[in-house]
Image (cartoon, rainbow, N blue to C red; front, side, top):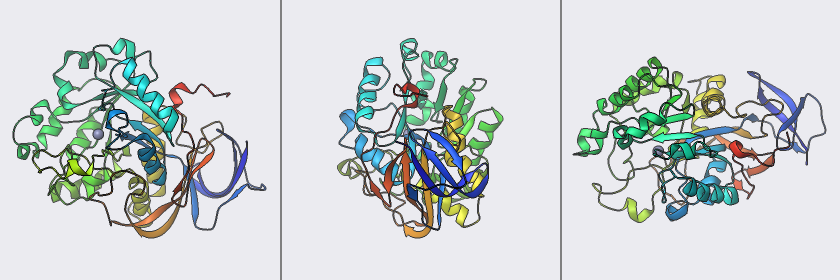
Length: 392
Ligand SMILES: [Zn+2]
């Protein structure tokens, strides 16, 4: 079914009142129509937001987060496409484990999704599967097959910490050179993305080496690692490094949540042994547009950060409101509220209560209303890398 939506939209670097006709894809854009969805004053239609670094869990880790709870939280936060990391149970680095994960997402995901493979000796088999690329964890930097994978055409996303950072006292891990040094392991390789830079030197070195790079809101905003709720890898740095990182908002390619849920009982373990991870996937888009409201960044920069650039990094037809692109939209409004999660199994994050000036009015995924004023519906997301139903 084709629908018309009418409202103010961000189109070709301008904000203008338009009518957009779409089914699963955008069909036509014009100035006058009889709309099926008429948006109220104060809302703004943006190209659907993308979070390229999430851990939606599921499979045997569904007690931490499952595909319904994690992708509902994504839609609540205006995210229309997520990239899911392979460190689940089973680990996603065989065609069989990947098929299991893809099936779970196909049945239950409420937003579009792509899946990354972990490092594996069987990469020739994984190359035939609909994966978005590979995730390289610090321990992988010691493996021979990692350097064969780095030669491949597909996207390689690096968690930048040297293998040494995994050993010994956690206090040593606070040294940023453990992070910056990891980039030197992979200098010279192509189509590399550096994820969750915690300090400006990582961002600058990534740029110099020709890599794309992102940061997370928690590495900018959370006031140090003080307990298990604020424990995350790489660790949150000192206040000076965080202030410098704020400048990097104009240099990084995208902002990711690194949504990494754990069960309450796990986060209640003693600090030394509790699992690291912060789960606030719904924070990113409202936060980025709060920066726009406060005139800290431009709207063009905001759309680059959450839509245009991540679409380019993944090389998928998202990130623009343009004919024949997928009909995924994030519709925001400027209003004051304080952050908390709604659908995630994780109810406690260090960003809880953070004052925001933008919220999600509606999320549209594959031409269907997935979230309306915070109410998320069971629409089905797709994997754009194996879009079988595509008639275009
Ligand atoms: Zn992660």
